[in-house]
Each structure stands twice: as C-alpha cells, then as structure tokens.
Image (cartoon, rainbow, N blue to C red; front, side, top):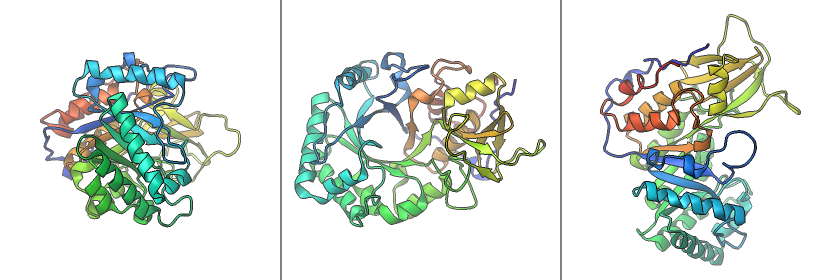
Length: 384
C-alpha cells in the first residue's frame, strides 16, 4: 500500500515557531451535508470541540435585501439540530454564512448600492441571528465586480460598515474573500475591510486556472497561498484577523503526457472537457481512501508544498493531504495568523476509513494547541 508520510521537509522559517494562546478554527458545514449518496455527516456525529467557530452555509437573501431564516422545511430541521451543538461546547461560536454560489453577485451588488436594501439587509440579518441565538454573520459575496458594477469595491465597504453599525459589538462580523491576488487588487479595499470586520476568511484555493494544483503553498507566480496571504498583509490587514482558507477537496485533470519515471507537477496537463470518465471534484476522504487502498499513487512536491495522486496513469488529482496540510498549519503559526477556515468539514475522513476519525481537524487542534508548533505536528499522524 502507498503510505502517506508526514515528512520533516519545510522552509527554514519554520524552524523557530511559537504557539499563541488562541487560534480560530472556523468550520464550514453545508446544508447539503446530509444529501446525496455515500457517507453523510450529521450534526450528531460531529465533535463540536474540534472547532471554535461553526459556520452554517448558506443562508439566502432576496433581491430586496431580506435575509431568510431558512430555505425550506428540510433546512429548518437541519439548522435546529446544528444549533444544538452549542450544548456540547459552550464556547462554540455559531455563524450564519449569508450568500454563496446560489446568490448571484448582481443581487449583492444591488443590495450594497441601494440604501433601503442595505437597511433591509442589516435589520433582517440581525433579526435572524437574534431569533436563532447565533453569534455572528459571515458575508459570503463571492464575486464583487462580476456583474459589471465598478462601484462594488466601495459598496462592499459601505455594506460592511452598515452591518458593523447595526451589530455594534454584540454580534461578530466576518467576510469571506477570494484568494487570487489579481482579483483582490481590483475588488477589495483591504484597509477599510480590515477595520470593519472581526475576521477575514481568505479562500486560498481554486488556483487551477493557471496550473493543475488547486492550492499550492508556493509557486513562481501569484497563484499560491503564500502570495495571497502576503498580499493581504502588505496592504495592511492585521495578521490576527486573517483566517487561512483550506479546502478539503481534490481537483482532477486528465494527464496528456506522463513519463513512467517522472511524476512531477510540471505540465503539460489539460482539463478534460465534456463528458468525463472520472469525477472532477473529489473529497479528502475519497482521496485518502483510494491511496489507502492502493488504487492511486501518492506524490508530494516539497517545493510547492502540494500533494497529488495519479490514478490509472492518466488522471492527476491535486488535493490537500495530511502532509501539505501540516505545513499550512505551520504557516499560520509562523505568520501569526488568526487561524484557519475549513471548507468543509464533511469532506474530512469523519468515519476513520484511513485511520483517525476527523484526522485533519484533529491535526489542526493538535498543532495549534501544541507548544512545539509545526515540528511536533509533523510527527502526530502515524503511517497507516
């Protein structure tokens, strides 16, 4: 069996890491977690002590700015069970994630630009949070500017300012932003955003428009985790407000050329078009299972700090492994970031098919609470 090993391969700056008293572990849980075939993560199966924040995605908002308590009866019932997690962790912060891919950017653009819709949004959002006894809001406006409104950059700040005023300090306010540097340059007023929110989830993944690895820590260009975080820091974002976003998924590509003795992350690769013979997006627990069962070959690139697998000699999947994940936790400690944002917890190996149940979430908890930081973290997970 191909074994996943956590190696002591890391840049020099990881040599002297220190732990701080509190980091955020912002766990995203989707309303779809119990849907579809295969393994389903119910709220009852989850240990809420693995997270500091539990973010329920997504709450809807209509085109007049009114935030809805739930999408439908099924969503209402699931949400009621999610809210009970607080009984098993009195320190858990329950967060309502408003927006997401089902809310078109033009809806947020119109709300942010129109004073009466902004008022609807701020008042209804506060009402929902108070009614559900939740602790805060995460604004998940995925693509400011995509509706060709060049005022979105300024209007996003105005919307956040209104929410801050409405919430005062009684409710927390977070925002999720895209990781790509070129996008952040055009659409995020970083100093003003940073002054208004309690935390910023930097979604440092989905870089595959310029390469096959969806979340490398380092690259030669701008499409990497390091470049994204360094950009936000250089523009004035306080490090303690930044949550490093990590997606527990893999993205698969068809390999055009592959030499039997050269498994590298250099091209050329081509994304399969049309009908595919393989799943394009895979969950971490699916990836670790294929490697555990020896149906895929595991590879790790210490230069980019990225993992990938090869199936059938033709399908390459870049994914977040134990190995790459451990280094990213060390990165959070090194730059004294606020913590991590995890997309999404139902993608973790919550049934223990590859060993430890919730192995990645437990890796976070162990490393961030350890006085030895990254160096101790790398020895945590045994080779199965």
